[in-house]
Length: 274
Image (tube, rainbow, N blue to C red; front, side, top):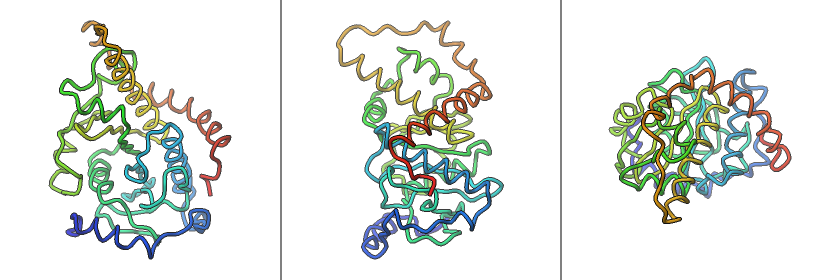
């Protein structure tokens, strides 16, 4: 693990922005420099970033989504300094599991993004995509001692594969990585206490759909609690069947919804495939 992954490294990133900012629309295309499989991953990941912005889950430039480059141990992450609604396939930064760039880029990466995502990609062969947000609803539920409550169908879907990870401050310490991996286990949903949400998917579509469900479950909970009425929980015998949706079923549903999401994106914010 790179020894420079410290708060000083983060400060150096901030200090160097003035010399590194590149206009997103002028980022040269890298399509001819990568394999067709990598290019498709880049297009899908750029679309996912823009969907995160479209659904108002972004936090300026400070969260992150990553995707493995098929057939390699490299992964793609956002160029630190771009908002999610302007990221393109060519502007994504390709790095290795040690945080080193393996393809030229004028941008640095978010050190916290590297800390959280690299260990999950390394530990989980099925983690094609890792999606992390600081949404208001997610952060609100992450601040509640009882976490996600079984009060909605969204929660019913999520609870059978939900993990929790305790807050350890800004994710800049490599020593936190084994605990992140341990707490996630084989699950695909995680609430980072006092922090935010995280989902893992076998594709960008899969990770997005998982986050949509987790975010919706948190939104329902916050709104239901704000109404002040007694909450009706799903009976335990029903919750016991929450794991019945297989990975194959989840992936099939995500694949069905993904083209429609891309059509919506094409109407509202095209250009991610540049």
